Amino acid sequence: MIDDLMDVVENPSKREKLALVMYFVVMVILATPLTRMAGFAWEKEGLMYMSIMSLTEILGLTLEAFSIMFFGVVAGLVALLVVDAKKRWQGVLLSVGVVGSLLVLASLGLFVPVVEFIPNLHWLLLGVLVGTSPGVISFLRQLDSSQAYEFRGAAWALFGLFTVIVAASHLEFHLIYMDGDLAFEAEDILLSTTSSVVFLFALYRFVQYDAGTDLLVLGPRQSGKSLLLVGAFLEAKNRQEDRNKFSKTPLNPSSALMEHLRQLDQPEEGWGVQATDQPRELSFRYVHGSVFPKNMELTTYDYPGELLPKLTKGSSDRSGAGESGAFADGGRRDRQSTYEYTYETEQDEGHEYGESGQESGSRSYLGGGSEDAADKLAEKTVESDTLVFVIDVEKYKNSKDMGLEHYFDIIRDVDDKRFVPVATKCDYFIEGFIDKHDCFPTEEFSSFKDYVNQKLQANEQISTLVLETGGDDIQPVFYQTKTNDSGEKVPLRDDAGSVETVGFDYLLDRLGG
Image (cartoon, rainbow, N blue to C red):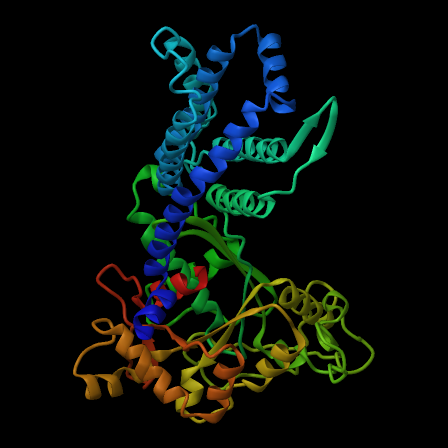
């Protein structure tokens, strides 16, 4: 029972379906008390009633015509959500809520039993036209553009209308009119307030299109940071290609990311992706989720791996809670001694998997030296809500320093962050996994993930990192590789010359969850 529950919580697809059921229950449960509250508030013929009557006089409409037209507006807005590929289920749930509300109003003798729809059909159609007009105009504009087909205006208009209705009904419901004076009645206020807040919160979640996730990938030199982002982008691109025209959302990749992709896409044998010699922004957007899809903006600050050891250096003063040390004051750090740093001229020995070595000498960044680059990285670390810690499996297998000690300083120095440990270059585990399970990782990826975690967490430093980041499993990713004549691992390419990635689909789901 507990294992099944944990599987639902950890599986993004199952978690979405559970959320769908929960939202459905919320809509069904709240439809009755909220509609009854609105009905009773209307029957008082108080401020809300007089305001509506004044509005009908200004518009030159009867109350019946206004009510039918308003219902048409709401129906048109909800219909747009049903048509919107990203809001379809939200629209269906709201439709259920609207039908439930009509039934409750009918039980109170309001709206449906007292209006005549046939003689006022033209007002209903006018309302539907008004409600759908924002979506129709937006749709026509997007036909010949690359923009996503989204009805954001309709979603927020619906949220605004329901917010006004719920807030006005809640206030009117608790007002008492006595001989021209007003008093406030607190009876049942806890139920009415809770119902109103929960409904508006659920509705607010319904109309959101953007997840707003700010992601930063951290890792030491040549740990595969750039290829991690390229692989995530390739997976997002594959998902985009599987969608129909009206469900697609532009990926909007940054130029730096496209440069990495161009280098990787070279037909020559090898990786091609050069080690980063100056901080650059790598970003792209994709749609996460199938039941409640949202636009996710994945942005990272790709930086030279040599800056990671300097990120928290000098942050020994951690006496207070919260962001301190290297991350205090918005990421600006003490420049007076410990942060003076320039790269020594060096020539890397060979090329490691993931990023080619480069000769570098006294490089500066952002036009102001390495201090500016480290400051920028510290600021980005503070601003990001999700930090991805890269664990280099190649260094692990070769018993080299993985640079994990710097992650612990970061964890201690920042608050309110989500940490996701990711193991790159996990193709080093393929042979051992096949020997043990007699299948390929692509056939049983969950078993491969367990195998990788078992191997890596046998290392005390790695197991401590997993514990400190919340105890979640390490997410394995890798490119399919082969060994060339020189004994180096190089990407395995298909007949079209494209690289093959594994595990990045699960990574995108995890980052989105």
